[in-house]
Image (tube, rainbow, N blue to C red; front, side):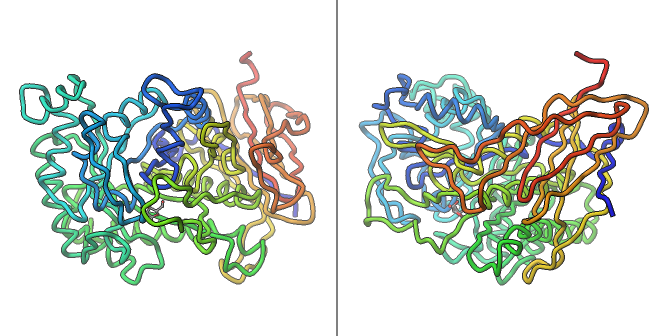
Length: 502
Ligand code: AHR
């Protein structure tokens, strides 16, 4: 049977919130120090922000960045990171076993977001602290001057409020590794009371409650149910986290099928959300914030470092081409689920399980996973289109069951259509016919292919072996039909525009 993808350019499934392409900067390893901030780097601006990193963040087109953690936030005193640098305390960070200098904090992050063309998504410490510290941080960021915290911000050089709209109510509060871990009832009540207090300051804040740390947690998805039974009426979204890894999979095909786990996890968390909605006769639809997702091979043990070191390398995973295909598969899942996933953050952005790697005092480079993310973030905007994929063969995998060899998603932004295609087959090229339904005729603007000599190929400081390249020219018969040949193990971006437009 031949494979085909029918695309309905005028049949929108749902709008895509641009914040689906967010990322994450935690005070962890070299994400901040010698990642985004390195005052004596040759490209640093007067505030110490690395210009070369900002250029790549802009290339990734990241609309929102979560900060400052992560596990780090659950014992973080935000007051340590504001005011004159010389007076900021050096603190022990229990989460990662290092010393935090606090040379970079909330105001620096706001400035960096502006320089990088992105928006902050801030997290509160609901581990060791609670409502009051959260309230004071929100006021510090958003209150007008003439008030205690607005004036404190002004005294620190920021008269204008930062106007942060999105806030995470803690981080992974179910995790035994989390400082100040809570039971679902304890956390649900705290999230509700914190949200309730913050809404008295500003009802328009977007608030995200912590879901489970992952689908493997013993209480998943009861955690979501219990937490939401406490706070459904007060929050806009619940968080989901998922890190996948090759380790433990039985074969490459098994590993490549693992985005299925993300799809199942979204289905299960939505079931919990919708159950609470029905039970409480709520009108609001709960959205999801997939605010940590990526490939992370924890078994590599790269979190270890000398105890209480200052910004040592941690979690500096080097990604393979196979990892890039998995990230591509996860992006397709997020796009398919974008009707309910409002925010998502690739974890993380620089040096720590990241698409961008830097050398202290030196250059930087793009990991393999940079590319599918950058393409989706640049072109997968606007709205998700209805499509129908048929004639696809499936491979049986021990962990994830039957896995489609080919997956595709189409989006439309104005008069541009972007089609993303993943081919997981390992031996043969796969023909795929794309057919655009409707009266309008279309032309191909661009076809890019991400492929590599082998699944284990990595990039490095001196090698960009895995990078998108122009695909073979594809003709489009009668403005509606085009034939792609998908090489084994490949990721594709096809951009289309109306035939009549230049
Ligand atoms: O992203 C690394 C860590 O993974 C984060 O700090 C934590 O939230 C998660 O467990």
